[in-house]
Image 1 (cartoon, rainbow, N blue to C red):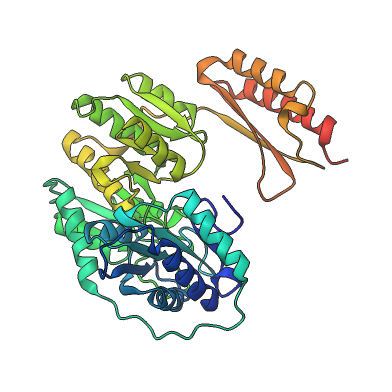
Image 2: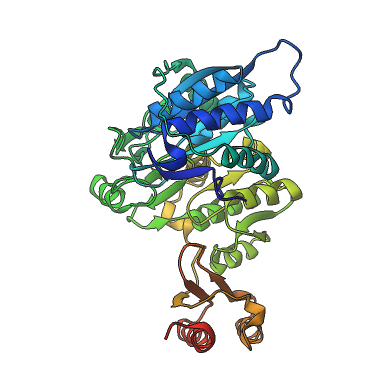
Length: 453
């Protein structure tokens, strides 16, 4: 991955660098030209793109500028307006758009923004395609002049088609009589998620669903659960649901105000699937950041865990390679297999959890109880350099010895920060005292060899 496209598209401070309107236009133009031949459409058939944003103040103008570049490359463009990232990807797939372009910085503050690009079928662009586009953009350089494109007109039928899709995808789920507190993070799901749950019969108490351009993710949503916790306790509901700014994450609050993150969600969904014989292959995909408590909770019911690197790209790759039904991250970004085209959708995740809740007639806290996270110690060590771990005397042997002592219910994760001069040592296992000792021992090796004096 190059310097422009990160693990989840282009992201940065809105109005600066590659997130200025002039740059957005250039990216749209370059993308359109680079993909023109790859799409292999019949001669004379138009290229079509759908765009959307998550409610940030900078979103509509960046969307309009990007569309201006695409039009110059021969695309017909339409706006879905305020929408979630998965919603736009699904619309792109269902309506056979060549491109779906989401203007969003996900869970980041309102001052930031980003560009996420999906190709045919609602799938993210391949790394090699992004690298080609990036090479052409860097060769062209940042444009100095802004793009003053006219605002796009929103086609609200696109939002409605996505809502209808989710309602149908619920499989006839009835939420009649169920009270839900829903936190929309003042983002892309602010109109959509309440409508979906309401149409299925729930009494929805919605908070943080009034985006004003500046309040997205501000003290709300999947990364700030305190307000939702207090509302669930105050209103006495059985469940609280939190999305993030662009609606691909889902975090839960149980009837006692307890937090259930992605590992807990995967535990509930997996155990329910096993009870109901829904999976031919009883494995899921999780990243290296998932707690070993997830592995233990699933091992008890015969579910294995395929562990992959950090990020939803890695999760999706694992799901596709092994044809598995479910994967995800602790952040609440849960990805379903062919059931949802390998797209992570926070609202759809909530529907699947609500299916488990309604079917079992048990409290959410009891359903999530099998997941008990192991203690974890994370130490950050300031370092003067970042040599390969294999070149640090004794480090790898010490890490292997620790993992051997901890057994299958423990682990060691060593890595350097990607943005700071830090080495990170994480040790996890069933004994808090033991892992503390192991973590400080490993940290000592870093300190003696490359630590800051």
